[in-house]
Amino acid sequence: MKGFQHPAVWAMAAAIASAHAAPAFADASPALKKEVTAGVEARAKLVQEMVDSGFSFAEPGFQEFKTSEYLTSILEKNGFKITHGVAGIPTAWTATWGEGGPLLALGSDLDGLLGLSQVPGSPQIKPLVEGAPGHGEGHNSGMPLVIAAALAAKEAMIKHGIKGRLMIWPGIAEELLATKAYYVRDGLFDGVDACIFTHVANSFSTAWGRMGHNGMVSVEYSFKGKTAHAAGDPWDGHSALDAVEIMDTAWNFRREHLPVTQRSHYIITNGGNQPNIVPSDASVWYYFRDNSFEGVKYLYKTGNEIAQAAAMATGTKVSHRILGYAAPNWGNKPLAEAAYKNIKAVGMPKWSAGDQAFARMVQETNGRELEPLRSEIDELSTPETRGTSLGGGSDDIGDIMWTVPTITIRYPSNIPNMIGHNVLAAIAMATPVAHKGAVQGAKALAMTILDFMTTPKLVQDAKAYQQNVQFKADKYDPVITADDTPAIWLNEKTMAEMRPKMEPYYYDPAKYDTYLDQLGIAYPPAP
Image 1: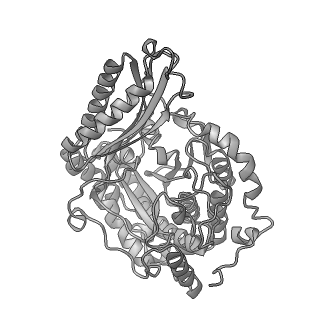
Image 2: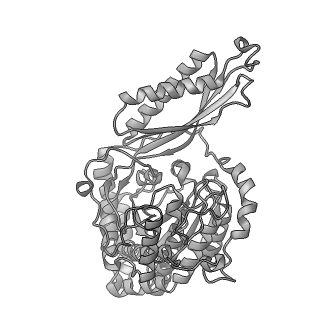
Image 3: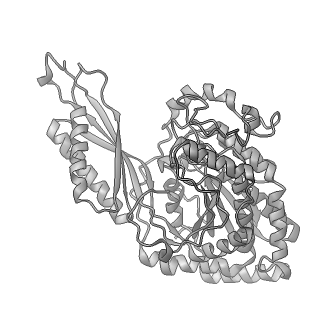
Protein backbone atom coordinates (compact mmCIF):
# COMPACT_ATOMS: atom_id res chain seq x y z
CA MET A 1 0.00 0.00 0.00
CA LYS A 2 1.37 3.42 -0.93
CA GLY A 3 2.79 5.33 2.00
CA PHE A 4 2.80 2.34 4.40
CA GLN A 5 6.08 1.82 6.19
CA HIS A 6 7.16 -1.55 7.52
CA PRO A 7 6.52 -1.72 11.32
CA ALA A 8 10.17 -2.43 12.03
CA VAL A 9 11.23 0.66 10.09
CA TRP A 10 8.73 2.83 11.94
CA ALA A 11 9.71 1.36 15.32
CA MET A 12 13.34 2.25 14.66
CA ALA A 13 12.41 5.76 13.52
CA ALA A 14 10.18 6.20 16.55
CA ALA A 15 12.96 5.16 18.89
CA ILE A 16 15.34 7.64 17.30
CA ALA A 17 12.74 10.41 17.40
CA SER A 18 11.94 9.68 21.04
CA ALA A 19 15.60 9.80 21.97
CA HIS A 20 15.93 13.31 20.54
CA ALA A 21 12.53 14.74 21.47
CA ALA A 22 12.03 17.00 24.47
CA PRO A 23 10.51 14.67 27.11
CA ALA A 24 8.02 17.28 28.29
CA PHE A 25 6.32 17.21 24.92
CA ALA A 26 6.52 13.49 24.16
CA ASP A 27 2.72 13.26 24.37
CA ALA A 28 1.79 16.76 23.17
CA SER A 29 1.44 18.17 26.67
CA PRO A 30 -1.41 20.49 27.72
CA ALA A 31 1.07 23.37 27.86
CA LEU A 32 2.11 22.80 24.26
CA LYS A 33 -1.50 22.48 23.13
CA LYS A 34 -2.38 25.72 24.90
CA GLU A 35 0.52 27.35 23.09
CA VAL A 36 -0.59 26.14 19.68
CA THR A 37 -4.23 27.16 20.19
CA ALA A 38 -2.97 30.63 21.08
CA GLY A 39 -1.02 30.53 17.83
CA VAL A 40 -4.24 29.84 15.93
CA GLU A 41 -6.07 32.62 17.79
CA ALA A 42 -3.30 35.01 16.84
CA ARG A 43 -4.07 34.18 13.20
CA ALA A 44 -7.84 34.74 13.46
CA LYS A 45 -7.58 37.86 11.30
CA LEU A 46 -5.70 35.89 8.63
CA VAL A 47 -8.41 33.21 8.74
CA GLN A 48 -11.10 35.85 8.20
CA GLU A 49 -9.22 37.33 5.25
CA MET A 50 -8.68 33.91 3.65
CA VAL A 51 -12.31 32.85 4.16
CA ASP A 52 -13.65 36.10 2.72
CA SER A 53 -11.19 36.11 -0.21
CA GLY A 54 -12.07 32.55 -1.18
CA PHE A 55 -15.76 33.39 -1.01
CA SER A 56 -15.28 36.35 -3.33
CA PHE A 57 -13.28 34.31 -5.89
CA ALA A 58 -16.04 31.64 -6.03
CA GLU A 59 -14.30 29.49 -8.63
CA PRO A 60 -15.88 26.20 -9.74
CA GLY A 61 -14.04 22.92 -10.27
CA PHE A 62 -10.81 22.98 -12.31
CA GLN A 63 -10.96 26.79 -12.48
CA GLU A 64 -9.59 27.52 -8.99
CA PHE A 65 -6.70 29.60 -10.39
CA LYS A 66 -7.13 32.77 -8.33
CA THR A 67 -7.89 30.82 -5.15
CA SER A 68 -4.83 28.62 -5.56
CA GLU A 69 -2.55 31.54 -6.40
CA TYR A 70 -3.73 33.41 -3.30
CA LEU A 71 -3.37 30.48 -0.88
CA THR A 72 -0.02 29.24 -2.16
CA SER A 73 1.42 32.75 -1.94
CA ILE A 74 0.58 32.78 1.78
CA LEU A 75 2.14 29.37 2.31
CA GLU A 76 5.25 30.24 0.32
CA LYS A 77 5.79 33.38 2.40
CA ASN A 78 5.63 31.15 5.48
CA GLY A 79 8.36 28.77 4.39
CA PHE A 80 6.44 26.07 2.52
CA LYS A 81 7.77 24.68 -0.75
CA ILE A 82 5.10 24.83 -3.46
CA THR A 83 4.78 22.32 -6.29
CA HIS A 84 2.22 23.40 -8.90
CA GLY A 85 0.25 21.34 -11.42
CA VAL A 86 0.40 18.01 -9.58
CA ALA A 87 -1.32 14.98 -11.15
CA GLY A 88 -1.61 16.89 -14.44
CA ILE A 89 -4.15 19.33 -12.97
CA PRO A 90 -3.27 23.02 -13.49
CA THR A 91 -4.96 24.27 -10.31
CA ALA A 92 -3.67 21.45 -8.07
CA TRP A 93 -0.57 21.83 -5.88
CA THR A 94 1.22 20.68 -2.76
CA ALA A 95 2.88 22.78 -0.06
CA THR A 96 5.51 20.95 2.00
CA TRP A 97 7.56 21.81 5.06
CA GLY A 98 9.74 20.06 7.63
CA GLU A 99 12.31 17.33 7.91
CA GLY A 100 12.52 14.01 9.72
CA GLY A 101 9.73 12.37 11.67
CA PRO A 102 6.33 11.38 10.26
CA LEU A 103 4.75 12.99 7.21
CA LEU A 104 1.18 14.23 7.77
CA ALA A 105 -0.99 15.40 4.88
CA LEU A 106 -3.59 18.12 5.49
CA GLY A 107 -6.31 18.88 2.95
CA SER A 108 -9.58 20.63 2.22
CA ASP A 109 -11.61 21.45 -0.88
CA LEU A 110 -11.51 24.76 -2.79
CA ASP A 111 -14.24 24.75 -5.44
CA GLY A 112 -17.58 26.49 -5.66
CA LEU A 113 -20.79 25.48 -7.41
CA LEU A 114 -22.27 26.73 -10.67
CA GLY A 115 -25.11 29.25 -10.50
CA LEU A 116 -25.02 29.73 -6.71
CA SER A 117 -23.74 33.31 -6.45
CA GLN A 118 -25.09 34.91 -3.28
CA VAL A 119 -24.60 38.15 -1.36
CA PRO A 120 -23.08 37.07 1.99
CA GLY A 121 -24.81 38.20 5.15
CA SER A 122 -28.11 38.83 3.36
CA PRO A 123 -31.03 36.71 4.64
CA GLN A 124 -32.73 37.15 1.28
CA ILE A 125 -31.68 35.13 -1.75
CA LYS A 126 -29.80 37.64 -3.87
CA PRO A 127 -27.02 36.81 -6.35
CA LEU A 128 -23.87 38.86 -6.12
CA VAL A 129 -23.40 38.31 -9.87
CA GLU A 130 -26.38 36.90 -11.75
CA GLY A 131 -25.65 33.40 -13.04
CA ALA A 132 -22.17 33.21 -11.51
CA PRO A 133 -20.77 30.40 -9.34
CA GLY A 134 -20.90 30.64 -5.55
CA HIS A 135 -19.88 28.82 -2.40
CA GLY A 136 -23.12 26.94 -1.78
CA GLU A 137 -21.24 24.28 0.19
CA GLY A 138 -18.77 26.49 2.00
CA HIS A 139 -15.52 25.17 0.52
CA ASN A 140 -14.03 28.65 0.94
CA SER A 141 -13.56 28.02 4.68
CA GLY A 142 -11.65 24.72 4.84
CA MET A 143 -8.23 25.64 3.53
CA PRO A 144 -8.03 28.79 5.74
CA LEU A 145 -8.57 26.45 8.70
CA VAL A 146 -5.84 24.09 7.50
CA ILE A 147 -3.33 26.88 6.84
CA ALA A 148 -3.89 28.53 10.23
CA ALA A 149 -3.46 25.19 12.01
CA ALA A 150 -0.36 24.30 10.00
CA LEU A 151 1.32 27.67 10.65
CA ALA A 152 0.60 27.48 14.38
CA ALA A 153 1.87 23.88 14.58
CA LYS A 154 4.95 24.72 12.51
CA GLU A 155 5.79 27.60 14.84
CA ALA A 156 5.56 25.35 17.90
CA MET A 157 7.52 22.54 16.24
CA ILE A 158 10.40 24.89 15.41
CA LYS A 159 10.41 26.42 18.88
CA HIS A 160 10.51 23.05 20.66
CA GLY A 161 12.62 21.06 18.20
CA ILE A 162 9.82 18.65 17.25
CA LYS A 163 10.61 16.67 14.13
CA GLY A 164 7.93 16.14 11.52
CA ARG A 165 6.76 17.07 8.06
CA LEU A 166 3.58 18.61 6.69
CA MET A 167 2.10 18.37 3.20
CA ILE A 168 -0.85 20.64 2.48
CA TRP A 169 -2.93 19.80 -0.60
CA PRO A 170 -6.20 21.15 -2.06
CA GLY A 171 -9.32 19.27 -3.05
CA ILE A 172 -9.79 20.44 -6.63
CA ALA A 173 -13.16 19.99 -8.38
CA GLU A 174 -14.62 18.03 -5.45
CA GLU A 175 -18.12 18.95 -6.55
CA LEU A 176 -17.32 17.00 -9.72
CA LEU A 177 -15.61 14.24 -7.69
CA ALA A 178 -12.90 14.54 -10.27
CA THR A 179 -9.36 14.63 -8.85
CA LYS A 180 -8.46 12.72 -5.68
CA ALA A 181 -8.44 9.33 -7.43
CA TYR A 182 -5.87 10.81 -9.83
CA TYR A 183 -3.82 12.10 -6.88
CA VAL A 184 -3.69 8.54 -5.57
CA ARG A 185 -3.02 6.95 -8.96
CA ASP A 186 -0.15 9.34 -9.65
CA GLY A 187 1.54 8.77 -6.29
CA LEU A 188 0.84 12.08 -4.54
CA PHE A 189 0.54 10.25 -1.21
CA ASP A 190 3.58 8.00 -1.58
CA GLY A 191 5.50 8.15 1.70
CA VAL A 192 2.68 9.92 3.57
CA ASP A 193 1.97 8.40 6.99
CA ALA A 194 -1.57 9.74 7.47
CA CYS A 195 -3.98 12.45 6.32
CA ILE A 196 -6.41 14.78 8.08
CA PHE A 197 -9.11 16.35 5.94
CA THR A 198 -11.55 19.09 6.92
CA HIS A 199 -15.08 19.84 5.73
CA VAL A 200 -17.55 22.58 6.58
CA ALA A 201 -20.66 21.75 8.63
CA ASN A 202 -22.91 23.36 11.23
CA SER A 203 -21.59 20.87 13.80
CA PHE A 204 -18.17 19.92 15.20
CA SER A 205 -16.99 16.30 15.23
CA THR A 206 -15.21 13.52 13.41
CA ALA A 207 -15.89 9.87 12.58
CA TRP A 208 -14.36 6.44 12.09
CA GLY A 209 -15.28 3.22 10.34
CA ARG A 210 -17.40 2.75 7.24
CA MET A 211 -18.92 6.19 6.83
CA GLY A 212 -22.03 5.48 4.76
CA HIS A 213 -21.01 7.79 1.90
CA ASN A 214 -21.55 6.28 -1.51
CA GLY A 215 -18.74 5.63 -3.92
CA MET A 216 -19.35 7.03 -7.38
CA VAL A 217 -18.31 7.06 -11.00
CA SER A 218 -19.03 10.10 -13.20
CA VAL A 219 -19.27 9.19 -16.88
CA GLU A 220 -20.42 10.92 -20.06
CA TYR A 221 -21.91 8.88 -22.93
CA SER A 222 -21.62 10.40 -26.41
CA PHE A 223 -23.68 9.08 -29.31
CA LYS A 224 -22.81 9.58 -32.97
CA GLY A 225 -25.51 9.41 -35.63
CA LYS A 226 -26.27 11.01 -39.00
CA THR A 227 -27.93 14.33 -39.83
CA ALA A 228 -30.88 14.75 -42.21
CA HIS A 229 -33.77 17.14 -42.75
CA ALA A 230 -36.07 16.36 -39.84
CA ALA A 231 -39.23 17.00 -41.89
CA GLY A 232 -38.31 16.41 -45.53
CA ASP A 233 -35.93 13.46 -45.20
CA PRO A 234 -36.00 11.99 -41.66
CA TRP A 235 -35.55 8.40 -42.90
CA ASP A 236 -32.00 9.22 -43.98
CA GLY A 237 -31.07 10.32 -40.42
CA HIS A 238 -29.93 8.43 -37.34
CA SER A 239 -30.74 10.50 -34.25
CA ALA A 240 -28.12 10.60 -31.52
CA LEU A 241 -30.68 12.37 -29.34
CA ASP A 242 -33.05 9.41 -29.75
CA ALA A 243 -30.26 7.22 -28.40
CA VAL A 244 -29.79 9.48 -25.38
CA GLU A 245 -33.51 9.47 -24.65
CA ILE A 246 -33.75 5.70 -25.03
CA MET A 247 -30.82 5.25 -22.67
CA ASP A 248 -32.38 7.55 -20.08
CA THR A 249 -35.75 5.81 -20.35
CA ALA A 250 -34.17 2.38 -20.07
CA TRP A 251 -32.13 3.45 -17.06
CA ASN A 252 -35.22 4.84 -15.32
CA PHE A 253 -37.05 1.53 -15.85
CA ARG A 254 -34.02 -0.33 -14.53
CA ARG A 255 -34.02 1.68 -11.28
CA GLU A 256 -36.79 -0.47 -9.80
CA HIS A 257 -34.49 -3.47 -9.96
CA LEU A 258 -31.36 -1.84 -8.52
CA PRO A 259 -30.24 -1.95 -4.85
CA VAL A 260 -31.89 0.60 -2.57
CA THR A 261 -28.45 1.99 -1.70
CA GLN A 262 -27.85 3.24 -5.25
CA ARG A 263 -28.27 6.83 -6.35
CA SER A 264 -28.11 7.76 -10.03
CA HIS A 265 -28.81 11.01 -11.86
CA TYR A 266 -28.02 12.57 -15.20
CA ILE A 267 -28.16 15.68 -17.37
CA ILE A 268 -28.22 15.90 -21.17
CA THR A 269 -25.07 17.84 -22.05
CA ASN A 270 -25.73 17.98 -25.79
CA GLY A 271 -29.15 17.50 -27.38
CA GLY A 272 -28.44 18.66 -30.92
CA ASN A 273 -28.37 22.00 -32.70
CA GLN A 274 -31.92 22.85 -33.83
CA PRO A 275 -35.21 20.96 -34.19
CA ASN A 276 -35.27 20.65 -37.99
CA ILE A 277 -31.92 18.83 -38.09
CA VAL A 278 -31.77 15.21 -37.00
CA PRO A 279 -29.05 15.39 -34.32
CA SER A 280 -25.86 13.61 -35.29
CA ASP A 281 -24.27 14.22 -31.89
CA ALA A 282 -25.78 14.00 -28.43
CA SER A 283 -24.41 13.30 -24.96
CA VAL A 284 -25.65 12.50 -21.49
CA TRP A 285 -23.67 12.77 -18.23
CA TYR A 286 -24.38 10.25 -15.44
CA TYR A 287 -23.39 9.92 -11.79
CA PHE A 288 -23.64 6.28 -10.64
CA ARG A 289 -23.40 5.88 -6.85
CA ASP A 290 -23.45 2.96 -4.42
CA ASN A 291 -21.90 2.18 -1.04
CA SER A 292 -19.34 -0.42 -2.12
CA PHE A 293 -16.67 -0.76 -4.78
CA GLU A 294 -18.54 -3.76 -6.20
CA GLY A 295 -21.82 -1.81 -6.29
CA VAL A 296 -20.28 1.12 -8.19
CA LYS A 297 -18.71 -1.26 -10.72
CA TYR A 298 -22.04 -2.99 -11.24
CA LEU A 299 -23.85 0.29 -11.95
CA TYR A 300 -21.07 1.38 -14.31
CA LYS A 301 -21.24 -1.94 -16.19
CA THR A 302 -25.04 -1.69 -16.40
CA GLY A 303 -24.84 1.87 -17.73
CA ASN A 304 -22.37 0.81 -20.41
CA GLU A 305 -24.66 -2.05 -21.47
CA ILE A 306 -27.74 0.16 -21.65
CA ALA A 307 -25.83 2.77 -23.66
CA GLN A 308 -24.75 0.13 -26.15
CA ALA A 309 -28.32 -1.17 -26.44
CA ALA A 310 -29.60 2.37 -27.09
CA ALA A 311 -27.00 2.79 -29.85
CA MET A 312 -28.02 -0.48 -31.45
CA ALA A 313 -31.70 0.50 -31.28
CA THR A 314 -31.08 3.78 -33.11
CA GLY A 315 -28.38 2.83 -35.58
CA THR A 316 -25.85 5.07 -33.86
CA LYS A 317 -22.48 4.52 -32.23
CA VAL A 318 -21.60 5.28 -28.62
CA SER A 319 -18.42 6.06 -26.69
CA HIS A 320 -17.93 7.05 -23.08
CA ARG A 321 -15.36 8.82 -20.94
CA ILE A 322 -14.93 8.93 -17.17
CA LEU A 323 -15.15 12.45 -15.75
CA GLY A 324 -14.67 11.56 -12.08
CA TYR A 325 -14.55 8.86 -9.45
CA ALA A 326 -14.93 8.60 -5.68
CA ALA A 327 -14.37 5.65 -3.37
CA PRO A 328 -16.63 4.88 -0.40
CA ASN A 329 -15.39 6.62 2.75
CA TRP A 330 -13.76 4.88 5.73
CA GLY A 331 -12.41 6.88 8.67
CA ASN A 332 -9.44 5.77 10.76
CA LYS A 333 -10.35 4.93 14.37
CA PRO A 334 -7.14 5.87 16.24
CA LEU A 335 -6.86 9.17 14.37
CA ALA A 336 -10.54 9.98 14.94
CA GLU A 337 -10.33 9.24 18.64
CA ALA A 338 -7.24 11.44 19.01
CA ALA A 339 -8.84 14.30 17.08
CA TYR A 340 -12.11 14.00 19.00
CA LYS A 341 -10.30 14.49 22.32
CA ASN A 342 -9.02 17.77 20.96
CA ILE A 343 -12.44 18.76 19.62
CA LYS A 344 -13.85 18.19 23.11
CA ALA A 345 -11.07 20.27 24.63
CA VAL A 346 -11.69 23.13 22.20
CA GLY A 347 -15.49 23.08 22.23
CA MET A 348 -17.86 25.13 20.10
CA PRO A 349 -17.26 28.78 19.20
CA LYS A 350 -18.59 31.46 21.52
CA TRP A 351 -21.48 32.75 19.46
CA SER A 352 -22.57 36.35 20.00
CA ALA A 353 -26.15 37.52 20.29
CA GLY A 354 -25.68 38.98 16.80
CA ASP A 355 -24.58 35.60 15.42
CA GLN A 356 -27.68 33.92 16.84
CA ALA A 357 -29.96 36.71 15.61
CA PHE A 358 -28.47 36.41 12.12
CA ALA A 359 -28.95 32.62 12.04
CA ARG A 360 -32.57 32.93 13.14
CA MET A 361 -33.26 35.65 10.57
CA VAL A 362 -31.89 33.50 7.74
CA GLN A 363 -34.00 30.54 8.86
CA GLU A 364 -37.18 32.59 9.25
CA THR A 365 -36.75 34.46 5.96
CA ASN A 366 -36.34 31.24 3.99
CA GLY A 367 -38.88 29.02 5.74
CA ARG A 368 -36.31 26.73 7.34
CA GLU A 369 -36.70 24.94 10.66
CA LEU A 370 -35.63 27.22 13.52
CA GLU A 371 -32.56 26.01 15.41
CA PRO A 372 -29.93 28.14 17.17
CA LEU A 373 -26.26 27.93 16.30
CA ARG A 374 -25.12 24.92 18.24
CA SER A 375 -23.55 25.24 21.67
CA GLU A 376 -22.38 21.63 22.09
CA ILE A 377 -20.12 19.48 19.95
CA ASP A 378 -21.53 16.33 18.38
CA GLU A 379 -20.66 12.90 19.74
CA LEU A 380 -17.91 10.94 18.04
CA SER A 381 -19.53 9.29 15.03
CA THR A 382 -19.00 5.52 14.98
CA PRO A 383 -20.61 2.63 13.08
CA GLU A 384 -22.78 1.99 16.14
CA THR A 385 -23.99 5.59 16.56
CA ARG A 386 -24.55 6.09 12.81
CA GLY A 387 -26.60 2.94 12.23
CA THR A 388 -27.29 1.44 8.82
CA SER A 389 -26.82 3.67 5.80
CA LEU A 390 -29.05 3.43 2.75
CA GLY A 391 -26.69 5.51 0.67
CA GLY A 392 -26.51 9.16 -0.27
CA GLY A 393 -23.81 11.66 -1.16
CA SER A 394 -20.19 11.04 -2.07
CA ASP A 395 -16.81 12.60 -1.29
CA ASP A 396 -13.64 11.68 -3.14
CA ILE A 397 -11.63 11.90 0.09
CA GLY A 398 -12.52 8.21 0.10
CA ASP A 399 -9.75 7.49 -2.39
CA ILE A 400 -7.19 8.89 0.04
CA MET A 401 -8.84 7.02 2.94
CA TRP A 402 -8.02 3.77 1.10
CA THR A 403 -4.41 4.90 0.53
CA VAL A 404 -3.23 6.20 3.92
CA PRO A 405 -4.99 6.39 7.33
CA THR A 406 -7.36 9.36 7.02
CA ILE A 407 -10.12 11.16 8.87
CA THR A 408 -12.39 14.13 8.17
CA ILE A 409 -12.91 16.81 10.81
CA ARG A 410 -16.24 18.58 10.34
CA TYR A 411 -16.20 22.10 11.78
CA PRO A 412 -19.05 24.56 12.58
CA SER A 413 -18.94 27.35 9.97
CA ASN A 414 -22.54 27.34 8.78
CA ILE A 415 -26.10 27.74 9.99
CA PRO A 416 -28.26 24.70 10.87
CA ASN A 417 -30.97 23.52 8.48
CA MET A 418 -29.75 25.12 5.29
CA ILE A 419 -30.09 23.22 1.98
CA GLY A 420 -26.88 21.75 0.62
CA HIS A 421 -25.75 22.72 -2.90
CA ASN A 422 -28.07 25.71 -2.64
CA VAL A 423 -27.66 29.47 -2.26
CA LEU A 424 -28.96 29.17 1.32
CA ALA A 425 -25.76 27.36 2.25
CA ALA A 426 -23.73 30.32 0.93
CA ILE A 427 -25.38 33.08 2.98
CA ALA A 428 -23.24 32.67 6.12
CA MET A 429 -19.97 31.71 4.44
CA ALA A 430 -18.32 35.15 4.61
CA THR A 431 -19.70 36.19 8.00
CA PRO A 432 -18.50 35.86 11.61
CA VAL A 433 -20.23 32.46 11.75
CA ALA A 434 -17.87 31.09 9.10
CA HIS A 435 -14.84 32.87 10.57
CA LYS A 436 -15.37 31.62 14.13
CA GLY A 437 -16.09 28.06 13.05
CA ALA A 438 -12.91 27.90 10.99
CA VAL A 439 -10.78 29.28 13.84
CA GLN A 440 -12.22 26.74 16.26
CA GLY A 441 -11.62 23.91 13.81
CA ALA A 442 -8.04 25.10 13.30
CA LYS A 443 -7.38 24.86 17.03
CA ALA A 444 -8.47 21.21 17.13
CA LEU A 445 -6.47 20.41 14.00
CA ALA A 446 -3.31 22.10 15.30
CA MET A 447 -3.54 20.12 18.53
CA THR A 448 -3.99 16.89 16.58
CA ILE A 449 -0.98 17.69 14.38
CA LEU A 450 1.14 17.90 17.53
CA ASP A 451 -0.28 14.64 18.87
CA PHE A 452 0.69 12.97 15.61
CA MET A 453 4.21 14.40 15.61
CA THR A 454 4.98 13.59 19.26
CA THR A 455 3.25 10.22 19.71
CA PRO A 456 4.76 7.43 17.58
CA LYS A 457 2.19 4.99 18.93
CA LEU A 458 -0.61 7.02 17.33
CA VAL A 459 1.05 6.66 13.93
CA GLN A 460 1.59 2.93 14.50
CA ASP A 461 -1.98 2.38 15.70
CA ALA A 462 -3.46 4.30 12.77
CA LYS A 463 -1.58 2.14 10.29
CA ALA A 464 -2.37 -1.07 12.16
CA TYR A 465 -6.09 -0.26 12.17
CA GLN A 466 -6.07 0.35 8.43
CA GLN A 467 -4.20 -2.88 7.72
CA ASN A 468 -5.97 -5.15 10.18
CA VAL A 469 -9.52 -3.79 10.13
CA GLN A 470 -10.23 -1.59 7.10
CA PHE A 471 -8.32 -3.68 4.55
CA LYS A 472 -9.86 -6.89 5.90
CA ALA A 473 -13.34 -5.51 5.16
CA ASP A 474 -12.70 -4.37 1.58
CA LYS A 475 -9.98 -3.32 -0.83
CA TYR A 476 -9.45 -0.26 -3.00
CA ASP A 477 -10.77 -1.07 -6.46
CA PRO A 478 -11.34 2.07 -8.56
CA VAL A 479 -12.64 2.06 -12.14
CA ILE A 480 -10.23 4.68 -13.49
CA THR A 481 -7.35 3.32 -15.52
CA ALA A 482 -3.92 4.52 -16.60
CA ASP A 483 -5.55 5.87 -19.78
CA ASP A 484 -8.11 8.07 -18.01
CA THR A 485 -7.23 11.73 -17.50
CA PRO A 486 -8.67 14.51 -15.32
CA ALA A 487 -11.46 16.48 -17.01
CA ILE A 488 -9.64 19.79 -16.67
CA TRP A 489 -11.67 21.46 -19.44
CA LEU A 490 -14.85 21.43 -17.33
CA ASN A 491 -16.22 24.88 -16.38
CA GLU A 492 -13.66 26.65 -18.56
CA LYS A 493 -16.25 28.30 -20.82
CA THR A 494 -18.37 29.33 -17.85
CA MET A 495 -15.50 31.12 -16.17
CA ALA A 496 -14.35 32.76 -19.40
CA GLU A 497 -17.76 34.42 -19.42
CA MET A 498 -18.21 34.99 -15.70
CA ARG A 499 -14.77 35.93 -14.39
CA PRO A 500 -14.77 39.49 -15.84
CA LYS A 501 -18.15 40.06 -14.17
CA MET A 502 -16.92 38.63 -10.85
CA GLU A 503 -13.54 40.36 -10.63
CA PRO A 504 -14.96 43.77 -9.52
CA TYR A 505 -16.35 41.97 -6.46
CA TYR A 506 -13.09 40.35 -5.32
CA TYR A 507 -12.35 41.12 -1.68
CA ASP A 508 -9.59 43.67 -1.01
CA PRO A 509 -8.35 43.17 2.59
CA ALA A 510 -5.92 46.09 2.21
CA LYS A 511 -8.86 48.48 1.97
CA TYR A 512 -11.64 46.79 3.94
CA ASP A 513 -11.65 45.04 7.29
CA THR A 514 -14.11 42.36 6.11
CA TYR A 515 -15.89 41.42 2.92
CA LEU A 516 -19.19 42.53 4.46
CA ASP A 517 -17.63 45.96 4.99
CA GLN A 518 -16.55 46.08 1.35
CA LEU A 519 -20.08 45.21 0.21
CA GLY A 520 -21.69 47.65 2.66
CA ILE A 521 -23.65 44.95 4.47
CA ALA A 522 -24.60 45.42 8.14
CA TYR A 523 -24.11 42.46 10.47
CA PRO A 524 -26.44 41.33 11.76
CA PRO A 525 -28.89 42.88 9.31
CA ALA A 526 -31.72 44.90 10.76
CA PRO A 527 -34.93 42.85 11.20
